[in-house]
Length: 304
Image (cartoon, rainbow, N blue to C red):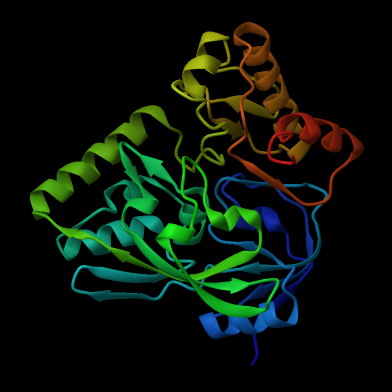
């Protein structure tokens, strides 16, 4: 089975942050079967969907990488929707709306694919990816077989899912939505889009979405605003003017520029509020000595 391969690919081109060095080879499967075949050959490969919520090292990624951007087949059967891992969230939102199905309205404002949305259990305005989830076909990296995982096994929580353990790669997922009036669905989608436009940067300003997760019963954006980071400019990166939990790549930023700013934000909130913010942005790739030092601080809890 032939799969498109690109040598020495600049991974910045696959991320919404527009940051990232080269990988050895980028594989671009055009079907779920091709993805499975690749993983059977090398189950350790890094998988990239839409590249949001992702900071790739400017030193690049050692080894091979797979992008799922072409895996976006969708089937609708009554209230059931089956979507491949690379399916864009906004596309799913619009498709569900056409079928008068409610549950995906918040996806309309997210740049992520269904793989990333399930990985992070993406949520907004009271809706979670897990709400409509039924089951998923995954590739088990350890046993090197395809398995079906059900909702009760997914360990869903705020910004959490079983997929974060690293053992499983999503192939496709089944969702059960609810019938609703087109007017109600459109109202929810319009509200989500309006809030995003008011508070969050568009991808014309390269960013990876929210930088930090919300701590219990609080908001990372509120805390960062209170300690003075809204609009903060650190040279090649800056904090968004209307929401302090977004970092913008001004055009020439590297991964260390982002990590240094993240560390400043983390340290200031810890100093003033004694709260240790946990990154939502995922860092991958080869690290410089300084990046190793910063990641040990920022990602200390997730590394335990």
